[in-house]
Length: 386
Image (cartoon, rainbow, N blue to C red):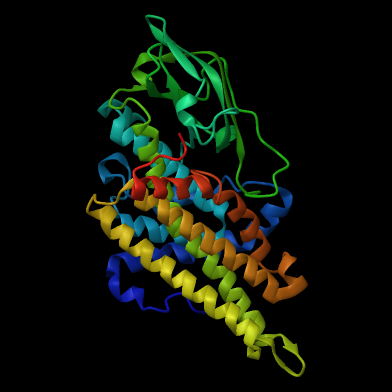
């Protein structure tokens, strides 16, 4: 098995490697034996969320005083890599919980909100969701239609969000909405609030072990103390998405290398014309190009992790690596599927499952093309998407 062609492990601390290896062992024991069956049945192993809480991967970079693990950003990335080696659905759940729910409460919330929600989210007692995307507004969240009005003793929330990970099972949702001055704010909506419904999205061919749904608000009364007071405008959700996109850039390496190593092992064992197919030039070309691209993506992830630890990573840099690394992993899945031939679509191997998942990952939290335009805007100063 090849996962470190450029000896990147030598650049990691002992603690980073120990944490990564503990998550790897957990995935091997608890995720890999059940994940194919969960995908086939379109069922989400929700019980794993509390196990992830016990493992310390929920809120991994949130300070320990709020129930998090206080890890650095490279450690967060390594955790996401191992979770996605198991399945993108598992990484998505941890990513949403950490970067899209716990992070905004920690960064933009009050001390009371942090103490009330973060420890329960870190332990997995609470499941969180992030409400930004709407039926009519995906890449253009600034045009969102969800609104809240001040009713004196509470806020009245109306609107809908869709394609929301964890929605049907969430205990709380961090929901972005506009006030009467069209300022974008965030509110914490609890599952029992009257008028709040969370229908599930079914018939998915991707992320089938992740529960997805809508957040629908019909005159939902939200207590005023549930408004996150320390942010206004699109900067808030974009900061959350930057954190999640960074985690994705690491996570997809797990899926990509899993596909590569599956293809490497299969091609070394599969005999055609009285020799292993790994001996043929075209197979070696595919393997060599996959490993080259995945190794380059690894180095990008490590460098952006260093910049994140120094608070120097820019949104445009994170867009570049999210786009590059997801595309690299998806290409590896497609090439690996070809190496396995018809066996590549079999549930006996993880390749098609990873490929279907990555078709969602390349779209969510910023589409492949939007991230390209973000890079274009950064290098030219001309926004092509406005």
